[in-house]
Length: 280
Image (cartoon, rainbow, N blue to C red):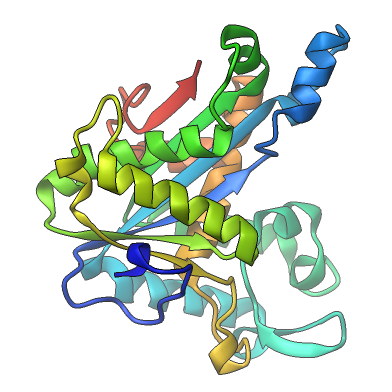
């Protein structure tokens, strides 16, 4: 099982798994600058104040259809769904929210009809058969409320895992977690925390629930074994879904992107505290 060993990746859907939760993040989890600005009575900008983690849950029965739809979308705008990144290497186009919003790389107006692409991407996301769990920490409030605040990444992750095992896996036997690989030290930090949560449970959810998680893995955006000619589309979906939620948390406004995904949040329309958690 992935969560019992060092950080590792996974290529195929395990036979004994009913659902996979792909996880992405937005914002900086560090509290250092927040604490310093509070101490020095400086204003804290919204862009550094909030940290969000979003889980995109895909059922086994929907995996192939989602894969086919995202491949068809890529093939429509790029030849064979590939792009020459930095004029150095041709590889599979990877949907990355910041690049899409910034019209960079394969998403440049010089490369594609951007407006039509956004319309097609919106339709793709609108029809995406997934369930979303997301948590956001207001780091300023967190630091002001607690003398020894819990690390935002750990706290967000616990909120997501609690809801995944208690609400979603209640109707499914087993699930795994896939996060985007960042680096050895970062992945080990996250894995160690997840192992602890699975072993001990949390204050609100008993450890018995967490036994439904039978693997935790860390995948890159591109599959290196295939020379980056394939991408892990579940991570792309969580990436594209997470930013609109992060933006909503920061500004309390539902833009078009958020409205497109809103009905996918667990508990919709009454998702606050369930599929969507803001803390404190």
